Length: 619
Ligand code: PEP
Ligand code: MG
Image (cartoon, rainbow, N blue to C red):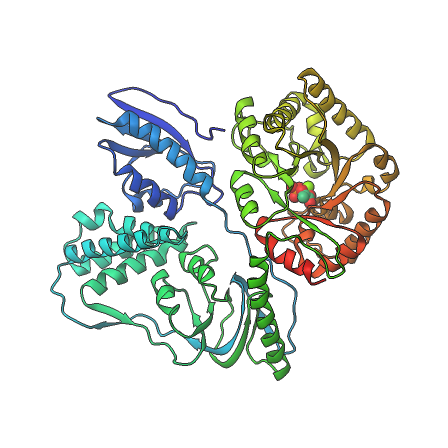
């Protein structure tokens, strides 16, 4: 699907293309840096036009300060000799980087308690550490040597240093942090307006002020970082004083370069008092596997603390029993991580020898790739509404998207469009409702507005057919089913489309999501007509408790005994294959219980697959 609306206007030898920010993260520093870096290769004047402002597309700080969010549009203007090539290439490149810009998921904390009082924090990187909590005496500038460089030369050398770091780490995701900083310091404000160190520091401060209070505030440490690097070139460096024994660092926030340096010390963990899980420092902490949390409550340094980022606990005065427990957990977690990753492609059997299949919940091609890499046994839920969430796709675009995903797995469960409730799609008009979660959602919409439904079914069928005979099994699943009549009607539509287009329905099954409680009370009828079930506990929970899943204050315990007893009832009643694809399937604390109830198909977020598989091997 083309997410970009191309409006080429050939006027004064310039081409204008409208680009849309499609990433949930907005247009932040790393993608801007990648984009600007590509812009430079063209012999053209390339600018970004937004709200009557025209900005040079190589100027990262300027683009960053536009604070473009998801859904915003801007015009890319290419003028001059290579305008045509530049426009075509950059349009595709922008679409690509938007797709690749993965949203960082919150770490799901396991429930755990310690005897001593603990403070709760937001986990940044998983793991457990037990060590003294040591404050970070940061950034004491000392003149180490006289380099004799001018500020301009120092900036140039910093650029070279960052470029080398980028090249040396190119295979790793973190390399983009260096590219981002290199692009920041390459901006014209540093090239032309910087005449003295003082003036340089003022410019940095001005840029920081511009970011303060915006969504991109977490990029401020990157400015501080380039500032440090330039000062170091001038012979002013900040000595990091760290303990010579293992320690947990207590800091307000960290610069990415500080994390890199600290990584080579005896650091066991990090507690940040400010910062965000998406900052570059946090990305590095995760990639170095340093257990880390953000705790905003004021804390004092302490002789021995437990930092349990798996459960989100910081225990300042642990008892001996707490220490023993944390040490056992730490050891188990390490072994678990190593083992689970090594064995992610192996068959998953419980201790009793029962085979459990672990499928992935995906929403696009990137997550399908991730699922493959993480060892998914197939796709248990393809949320198709996210594939085409910005613009109505053409039939061909739909077909290609399905083919690309289907190619990767032998067993795929595709859910037909599930719109309504909290999922809106701009090109689909559902009249305003007082209670959208109880209104036209999922299959109700598809049955009302059949054109899209039929087109989608045909694209799914033809994609599967195009891959035959290598493709093995396709399951088509209808969302938000509440009555048998709805299923019958939906299946009849699907079968008639198949007949009309000569689709062979061998190896294609039809089933439903169990999300609405009414289904639980009509399982006997459903057993006669469906080929399979998959339980959507996210919606089932909200309908059982009458609490909106997006409600800001009301929450339901995700492993509530009431929900578990509903799952037990369903498992007892179902005579057709059944799986769970709601979030509960990825919660290790109930894995054993679910398997004991008879669930041997679980579908979860790709990144949880290795650890859930390992959990299963141990139940
Ligand atoms: C669910 O409701 O549990 C489910 C898997 O579907 P979604 O979260 O996409 O509504
Ligand atoms: Mg649902």
